[in-house]
Image (cartoon, rainbow, N blue to C red; front, side):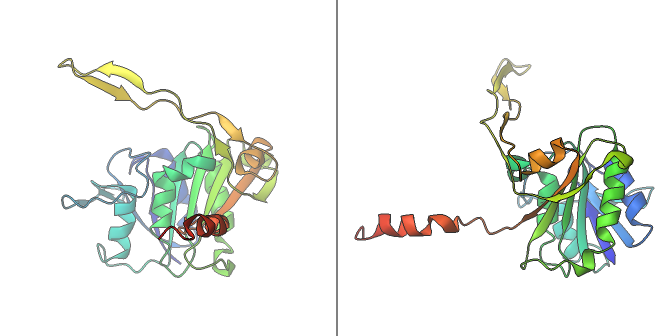
Length: 247
């Protein structure tokens, strides 16, 4: 397949290089990634200015925009390619539970939801074994063309930070959840103005069996299907009752 690869850690990230080295063995690969670390960018697009696409010495392209910008440009004529699928990663750290709401890695994959094959986001739940995550991605890609999900679904993959031989297997999971994040960290800029650092992510709240947190904790690769449909269908009846006779 013709793959468009992106990430949110930036065009020089270690995880991106490992991913490309594995996937280019079987596929044609084009890389468009942010020119800097844009973790937490979520699905944002840059609409207030043009974005600049720059070739790199290794054949990758950098973009001074968000992860979603990178994929949007890549599938909408920014380069002379026609991608079959988007792969995003390998993220430096987990994208489990509520993390997917903020993740630029997941957002880059989600921007590829229009293509012929379901996009994939890949994250390493740690900082060491990027090669393990890259090998897992390659294994999954070998049968990706047979994957049949609802339209516009993507898969979110989280890999334990273990040597490849110690991975126990793969689990299909639901999203767990976290508590509210830590308090904002008060600071002052050089001119004395008050500013804040975003606090640390919240502690894990739901890591019960069946969740992505549980699978990774037990040494399994977590694979979670995600959909851009954020409607809470189970709430429709309650909202209908609440609105009855209101207008």
